[in-house]
Length: 487
Ligand SMILES: [Zn+2]
Image (cartoon, rainbow, N blue to C red; front, side, top):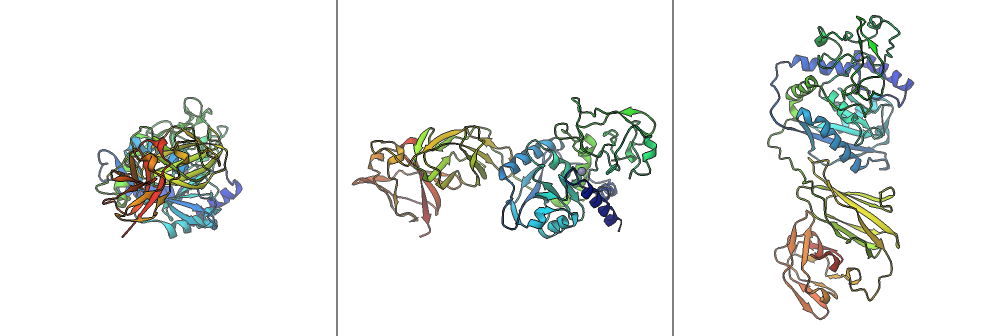
């Protein structure tokens, strides 16, 4: 009953102050988590080394599939999230693909109840469920115990944001550093003692004697009374000076993720906060534990772009862009831009293959392109250099380079172990041809012979699937898609 009373209180607060709230995690939710952790006080100490925790992303858009969040920004945000959690030894990974939900009333939910309905209907079991929405009840984010998931505003997450770390701090039982002061505006013009009747917890003092029973119950997080978003000074502390109940003065530590300082200030969880999260993981959240996780990371070497080779002119239709397949990569982000600094991105695609086939681009234009590779564990990934190509309808007949050789494969699709012909491919007889599978495995095509103007290839033991046919020397031949079917 009390829970609903407090929720109603929060809603009043939000409607009075819409879009300005940082975090909507209720006092009652924080109390529940804190008590649950306290009740499991004697649980095992944290394991040694890195703990891999499965995280599920729910990308929420409108009924008409508009408004989904950019996958690239999701990965950049997750990269920051794992950097934020690294000192704790907790690292998140994607056990399943991103879940897309089309529902306007969940995407823009002014009230917590609607968000909780979304969570209860869509949560995956035994993972950390995170929902990316346009409006999480007027906040940047919140955790609710009833929905047992985190909702995050698409406007508040990104590579320079620590909102995700803050909300997952709640998920693993951490209260705010100013816990108890939610919704109260502190002023040092008023005696701090006089706030006690309004403040939900025992007000924390500079003196550490009772710190275990005051505010967030952590002794290595100093007093904090600021419950609205604030900016820190260069040293990470508040510019304003606060007074505790015994008139000792202090400045608030804005370096902690669980404070309400802004993103430039936040950079850490305290040691006791990290222990508490690990204890909570080992206890009430033991359902997240996995055995034999095999984390797959991506080497930081730059990705080589294969085709189009740099600065080449290509026809504007049926364009294949291909790049080096990266070991362990499961996602590739391709960006094509009309400007060199990527201010006008015309394609922003997330694919599972080391190539993309585009129907068309506007003719007679310059395009810059780059690729980033990620895995389900490696959200920072590695990048390519920026490549450049130009589209042009007319390709000179005298030009003996790749673009004008009619790269028609006959038949296509082909059946397993069937021969195929590259029409007018005689001039390429001395080139080394390769087939690249959708997972980046490469097969050298040794068996080829000239027949008239054409080249005939013989396939042995090539599994059905989608391949790219190309030459080792990227400039020799425009890669084409080749589909091999079951017999
Ligand atoms: Zn919060």
